Length: 346
Image: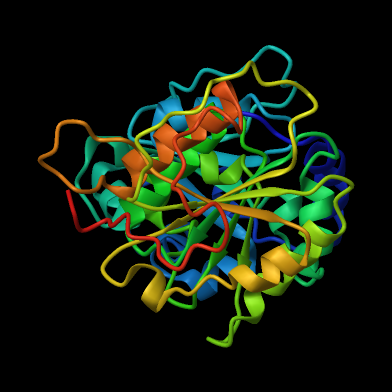
């Protein structure tokens, strides 16, 4: 997983300017009552999106995910909780202050998580990263993208109306693994990346890969920020729209270099595809972007499409490792009217 330098530098400043809830249990050794105020706070963070946004905190479950997060200087782990006397979390020697640990009963752990899963027995209270603060969210989308995408060879993943938590979480985890720099989410019904199911599937990488929701009120204006960001690039961005139509001829696969153009991959999903989640191709073209359709070849001939998380993972690998020109593209390299990779076609 990676953390942009801008997010690391801004973490301390964000923590200083944002008043976040700090549980009294930080000075306790154990909590056994489900009615404890700390337990109520943690449970509300898990179950309520408005509550998470109000307090700019969330709960992360599982030793492995928490250990990974603790390695990043820009992630503030406020406290850990578990059914044992120690967190059992691997923390790097470079982290001077280990978060305090409070022992909780299994009943309390189930109350917080809403499940009896063994993974839920170890959890951490984590502050939102600086890039997810309310102040950052109020920044115009194109400025936010410019601040969180590198000037050279940036890679932006756009999740267009995806609603399945498992698939969105998997795509965040893949984006982190393959070095994609940021994620933009469109559509009023798109799943919240802070959703507990997303975080579990993402192994908490939604805290590490900066993301921004492009709310548009159903009028298509959420794409304006992406178009404006494209317009301000020194090189014409290449926008890939995932499709199921593929040309039989495959392009050569060059070795990617630092001279790669800005890259945007758009994955639309689920039952309605692009018909329910339209992409303003003309606006992107007018902003100077080169728009292409791209597909994953399936020579087996049985299934006509892949699960969006599987297809997106393949495409991110191809674009980040093999390069922009190493993909099979459809004959119509210009505006693409349809994206038909579906989460419901397993």
